[in-house]
Length: 142
Image (cartoon, rainbow, N blue to C red; front, side, top):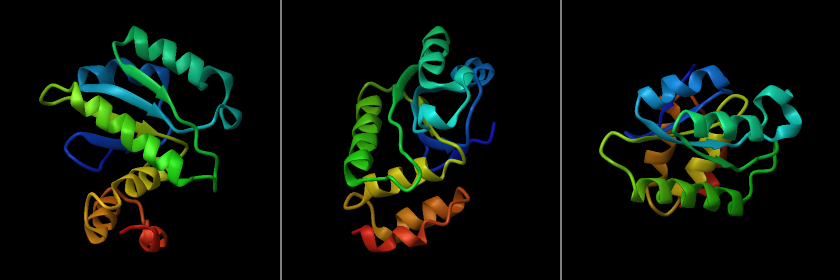
């Protein structure tokens, strides 16, 4: 598993496996957000299977597919809402993981969801520290 920290509570990652879910729960993750469309992944890792396995591991699961090149403001806003909802009921130490093929779509959606909440430079630096060059989004961040 290649978990990349954006904040103390929000992480992004490339595709995870069902076998990773118990370890994520043990590490304090409480919420998973699947940004990978079912059409680009084998059946064993599609959203329905991941949701079932997440529930068995005690994790909340949300399916918010983002097609390659299809990130919209509405999808970014929805990701931000899911993060906010998870954070409202969180205990200290609870963590949220959003994942896709490489983590880039998840990181990009997070960055756009933070526009107007955090300074542009902070958003871009946070993503860069996690290994994502989102400088191409700079013009979309306020």
